[in-house]
Image 1 (cartoon, rainbow, N blue to C red):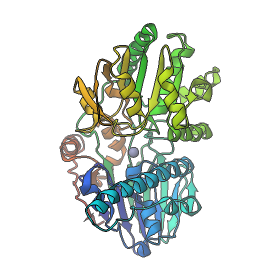
Image 2 (image 1 turned 30 degrees about the vertical axis):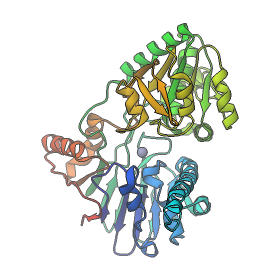
Image 3 (image 1 turned 90 degrees about the horizontal axis):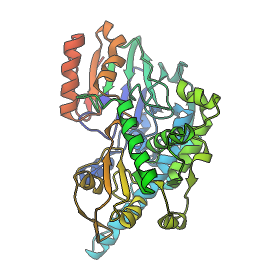
Image 4 (image 1 turned 60 degrees about the vertical axis):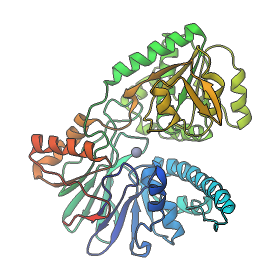
Length: 454
Ligand code: ZN
């Protein structure tokens, strides 16, 4: 069994039974040239893979599926229905970015007299995706390949996300996939598989718990109230799927309950707008709070709560909006996308508020704002920062340490082999120590391409 480890991105696991081989996730490595080079290495002999199984739609779990297709893979791809819908959006966007990246690289290479490179993949390699998928329901045992059965359990991390339990030759392997915190709104709490001989457990936040969610929401309300009174603008750099819906959800509740006088929400992201439609399609996956709100007449993800901004023209017009408003736009780390235009147009105004609701990597514009830099460069121009920069840490869609340990608890009885993945080493080491302390289990910390035998 092959395992990806020691990296936050690029999940992909090959499970090999006597009779068949399946691939669980096929994620893209993200960040830096090193990652780019690794994406270009073939995941595996595609002709030896009988099925691909996806835990959820995020790019770091699905982004190399088009590469498999490009390499000739034509077998089935198993995923929940929302994962298929969201992955299609994610992969099309990725293909577009890959094409743009290659064009940019080739302009430089051309100047240096170097031969052109091909994009990693293009939209042509995403087109067959939907036709290759087989939609699965949670809890249903699905024969995915000869001698291998799979079941998906709610993972509470994004719409459609699941942990996967694989059974082959009397052995059971569980992949946690990415797990959500149990306080995450909109989605149901993760479910806990109860039986495994081998467990792959994510460890993104294996070293800590997040700030309590209620505290984050209180902080959020304070900022929103202040901005409404000041008639300022809130800019929220956000990823298109998950965080954008989460912010709209909380704003709609504040407006509906009359806690803050309603002001416009501009969703300035075609991809987030597409994702919004997918969220509307699967009310059967909503958590109890959202179902209760719906019953009481409040549908916080309903289009009535936000104004779509589709074209670049729509986006530019937002510069002229007067009065309090919130603009949600990508990219989440301010390293590209429409948010840059809004930041450039508004950072110098003291009535602007920037709400940082997600992780900002080192060197990103988002990180420089968080660090309190007073002069930043956007599109080659220096912009003074007079806006208030708020960092809200509790919006994560990843389970913190306590939630990870609680998810694992029912599996501990049989003393399974545990492999910690999807975290950097300090996070994995911290979670490993807790698993030893609480369950007497010493997990493995697999490296990329390492094999775990059962
Ligand atoms: Zn994820």
